[in-house]
Amino acid sequence: MSKNPTLILGTAIVAAVAAVLVYASVYTLDEAEQAVIVQLGAPVGDPVVDPGLHFKLPFVQEVRRFDKRVLSWDGDPNQIPTRGEQFISVDTTARWRIADPLVFMKRVQNERGATNRLNDILDSVVRDKISATDLVEIVRSKDWEVSKEDLARVQLNSEGDEEILLKKVQTGRQELVRSIFTQAASQMPQLGIELIDIRIKRIDYVEAVEQRVFDRMIAERQRIAEQFRSEGEGRAAEIDGDTKRQLAEIQSEAEREAQGIRGRADAQASKIYSEAFGVDPEFYAYLRTLESYSKTVGASSTLVLGTDSEYYRYLRDISVHDKSK
Image 1: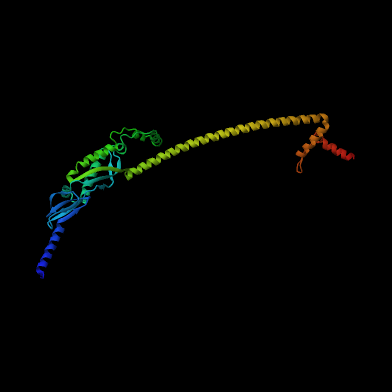
Image 2: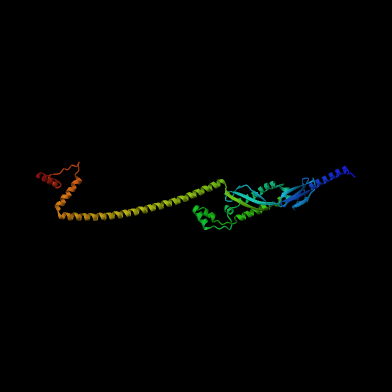
């Protein structure tokens, strides 16, 4: 018995249509997903948050998938004045997740829209809180204690910073971040978002203020260098003075000792001369006179002496002695 071709074709068509309908009506969610069913542009029913196999009306309904995981938000650094009119650059980050995908889809549509709203809310809250807080409350913790090393370093660098360092912190950085989180988190449920936490990543002076801070630091270091240099020059002058004083003392002592030696030598020479003079005074006088001739009379010397001069006596006697020969 032969099969009816029309029946076979009809069965195949029905099976194909059934397969397409089943394929179009079945969808799956993994552990990191949640979904909202949309029919003709409007959400239908409650959000689907359980992973696994799910069904929807084929061709009429579509699945809008949303991330169930924790997402991060990184804001751009903002220049914000503190309560003391000190401009600082504040860089913040936060973690959030989609708590109600139905509200999330209605209010912000997708993650890009959520990021834009987070930018507006978080930046605004951070700016309000920072501008109402002193710089010392922003950068320091309430339980942070000033060490002796910190105080000594500040006293060495700048006397004006000592008052800031010793200023009592009333709230501190943790309380500031907590207040920012509380105020920002209260605005998130209307967006279908749960704010998990927010952190201040970095706080810097803005470029203009930072340059003034650097100039101040340079000036302080130059002042300290000048102080060290002045103390060094004073110490060098003191050492140089001590050296000169010691040198003068040594020279004076050496001169005194030399004078003593010279005096003793002269005394000894005088004694020897006296003893020699006592043995033969005439010979001694003759010898001393000859020695004086060698020192006073040279090749170009001219002496004008009388013939009866005592200084000329030995020369005259020598001439007379030569003529007698």
